[in-house]
Image (cartoon, rainbow, N blue to C red; front, top):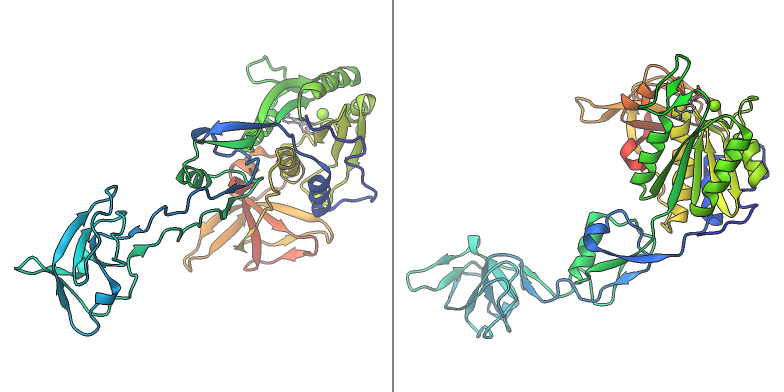
Length: 418
Ligand code: AMP
Ligand code: MG
């Protein structure tokens, strides 16, 4: 396991910007170092452990890009059409056969190797075959047309996939194209997830009138799974300092990250902070972000701890800015910056300067083809429906103080966040 120092999350100032939080995490959290080889079909979403360079040029041999007729470029007619006798027929997967003689053409199909001598292919749609069986080709074709030269895509030895890449289907395709059967990736990080609060019960358990079903744990576990974590569900801990401390300590030895929600505000019944201090070190990150509350950051026996606020929307937003970068860093992934896409605001909004705010919005395609973002009508940080009935978050930077309808704003889709 990655062992982090007790002062890993130390921070001096009173307020922390989102960018500062992300930078601290990226520079101070180190990756797990175990590496495992996974077959291609299990590699999606895994973090590439080392650089992969091209062990084969792509394409591996020069081939035809079309079904047609291969000729020598020195024979290409410049002004008038010309007829070539056809000798040879090369299918995909077959060997290139005899060289094409001057003044001749070879029938060739897409993906078939170019025969020696030939370097240009006429598309079959552009030619005709005359009564004598010769292929009649038009004048003016560019030498080298319709041919895919060896290495045109990637040259032998070229850098292809970089360490820390979160593998996508197309990356796996590239590894397969080199003939690899497995890929070295970092092991999945193990994340323990607790909820805290006497008012919570698990779905399936009997609920008293003043209790509610624990929803954060299932949201957070699903987000972690999407980020490639091996998730451990450690249930609900009561608002009890001793029980919390015990639960946290136990989880620290066998996990790479401990994540809780609830119990980190300043109320008397918020015992998570004290419990972390009993078994490790703790700092509160007061982040300049809305929705959001202070996030508790700690180290318990070398294992990082993150305590998210209990309100579902605050939990969700702080997950994105604190847990997501931590998970990526522990997993050995390159940081994946969130890139908001420009959309047109269909709402009015006022905000405090020097604070990053996120507005839950739905997107609509307008008659002029542009996307417009409509704000969810209510703002409470406890409203799960506000996350369910929207498509993503509009990010309003620290410097912004108001938004007027028609203004361009940056949109982050929920799918891009995990
Ligand atoms: P806390 O941060 O513990 O003060 O909780 C803030 C609010 O979030 C309270 O109304 C809690 O009931 C609610 N809450 C805390 N944890 C959860 C959870 N796991 N699922 C749903 N709501 C929660
Ligand atoms: Mg609570």
